[in-house]
Image 1 (cartoon, rainbow, N blue to C red):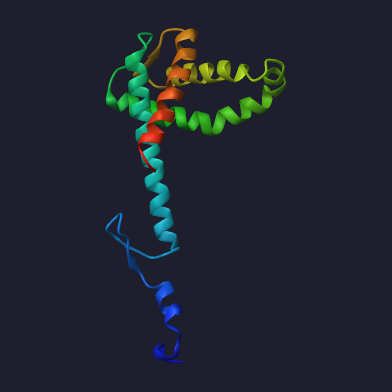
Image 2: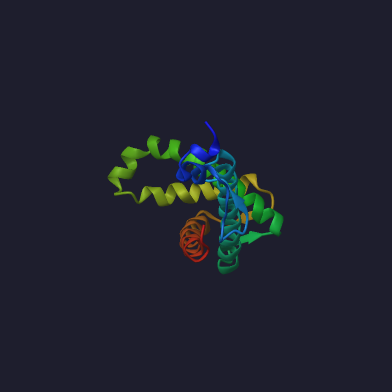
Length: 151
């Protein structure tokens, strides 16, 4: 079967196209395109978290970050802790969360911030209450930044 005998729609469906927003050549539905987009989303989320951590530390006197590198590592460690440790702790403390109508989740977030502070050398939290306030401010700043920065 020659290419001329195929319907034009079949050829067009698999042909690469120029992405107008990105200005790059894209193959629709290709695994490579999806992988690159997923990696870019992860990097963008990491940088947004870093900016949110820097802003939150600037606003709160009980939190200190020594450098931009420490903020990047803090964002990475906090993201890993929230992805791996937090779900396990939420399941284990579910009865306590139900009794307190979900308010125990705030305590859990503060404890995870303190854990991050003990792991990352350039990130310092002076007390539990500053960790609790940091988790609240960080959540608000991060939500605002995710709304402002598309992706």
